[in-house]
Amino acid sequence: MKNILIIGAGAMGAAFTFPCIDNKHNVTLSEPYNFKLIKKINSNNKFHPSLKIRLNKKLTVKNFTGKLLNKKWDLIVIAVSSIGIDLVRDYLKNLKYNTKILVLTKGLKYYKASNKIITMSEQINKGVKKLDLSVLKGPCLAKELAKKIKSSTIIANKNIQKAKSIGSLISTKYYKIEYSNDVKGVEICSAIKNIYAMLIGSGEGSNTSSSIFTKSINEMIYLTKHFKGKEDTVYGLAGVGDLYVSAVGGRNSKMGEFLGKGYTFKIAKKRFMPNDTIEGAELAKKIGKYFLKKINNKKIPLMVALLKAILNNKKLNIG
Image (tube, rainbow, N blue to C red):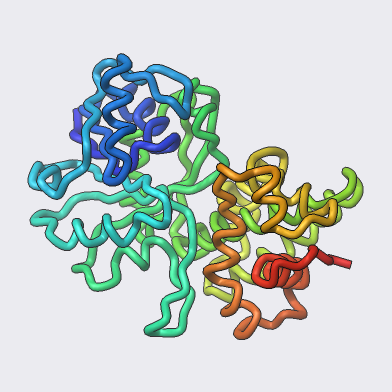
């Protein structure tokens, strides 16, 4: 039995408690921002409003504060959105012991100081003593995980034995884990697939979408290799697997559908999806200028078309 702390009580952080508790661990689900969510969960018999499901009665649910890190945790899971990574990093600076840290957060960031695109694990390690970080990505919808529908994900660490040591703590009959030492490739794929899901969603029919899907994979291979990841990673769970889940449903593909019908992003967002976060669009805003300037645009025409549509609020034109 291990002590596991999950930082981020949104849908994925909450869903992740199920395989952890099913492995007989002591699990604490914490939230650094939305304290009203914690109050709501605890006052409603552990019912999670996003998942529409009751969490395990053995789960501890509380607000996240720096004091929580004074306890010796065997595993710390970071499940905040990409916006919250800097806050978590600032707390981890004061971590007084070595422990395993697993990053669920997907995304990329333009780091102005070095004029580079960095991943979430690289962002956490900026200005912090070297942490024992692994990343978990793949095609896993939070609501399905919470219902214990069979899911598969991938844990990446340059030392694959460290990845396997975490997998042994959380894998179940319904939650299967694969492993990789290609941390960069896994993180790149898991982020850019949201942009390609929008593009696939823009197809006017199955014929068009399948063509865009194929071309998207080719561009993902180019970009993954550009950022020093491995081509094989694109064909795995973090690449094609996650792209498929995002493309057949979800907010990114839904937004893509509106873009394909001729709406600009701002109009589509305001009219049809005012309360939704569109991860692909948010990522486009963060990395768009860098990609358009620093990467061979001829190799990634689909990506370029989407970036220009979002950054300039123009109609999507993929030819």
